[in-house]
Image (cartoon, rainbow, N blue to C red; front, side, top):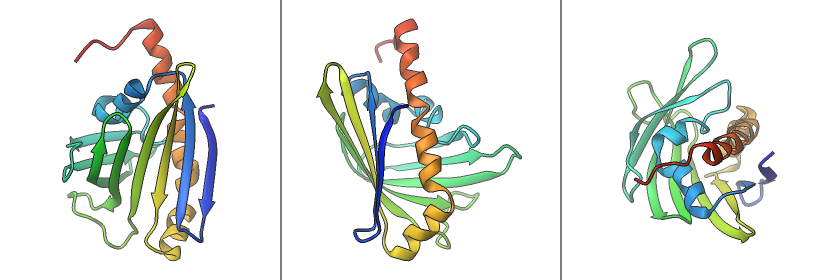
Length: 171
């Protein structure tokens, strides 16, 4: 499995997932930069994601929904805060209503992605979620965030394994 650690720190209001991949930082970055690739792993296997807007630039907006096994949809959005391809991405991550507007009844958090080469053709990716307060962190964790993101990132190895069979064309 690609996920090597998940750390929760209620004192600093952070949850950090770390994963390692047999791929270059550029290739791992493409998993975020290409919405069709992002759809293949962002949601857990039982809640696949569909990205309807993907502006991965500072000030950009990303909109998506995850569809559950009963056809239920959970909508979300990112407000892109910072981008430094292929190493860093920061965004505000929140729940949305069906019309795409932020659902302020549910907590948001700041997501920070770091992608770094660790040698021997391997790359480490960390996804840090920073919560505004302890109640928000507890609520999102109670909703299954840790399991969901662990399952989601766990799908990446299969996507990367396809590269050996059919390399991604230059874009």
